[in-house]
Length: 126
Image (cartoon, rainbow, N blue to C red; front, top):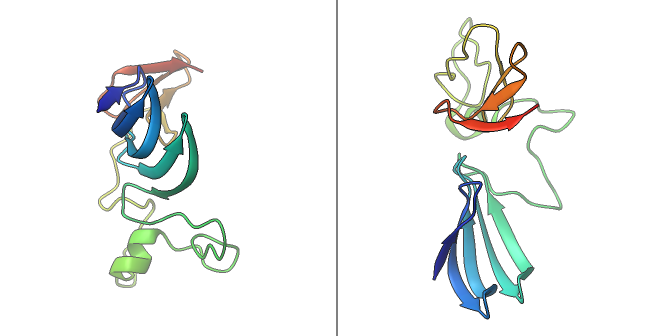
């Protein structure tokens, strides 16, 4: 079955008695995915994959550590030529509205103290 949460996150997979049970996947609005084997709504084993394809590993995590500060797209696609900087993992970077800040799941406007998603739909108050 499938179920969409109020946050826009969608679950696709096995359900039993109204709970995630068996193999299933959460699809997040930001493009991330969490695949897991569920038992009574609790994941017993799983794997998270970021929107850019990078898989999260609890151990031996080599991304953005103290020694290597490259973005994942730089690691997987290579560095830009000298003089061309990459300031975000997205290339080209997302356009940030004047006076706002990119907070990972949307834009924060300090004047209104509101966070909207990247399609400018209300997410939450700060």
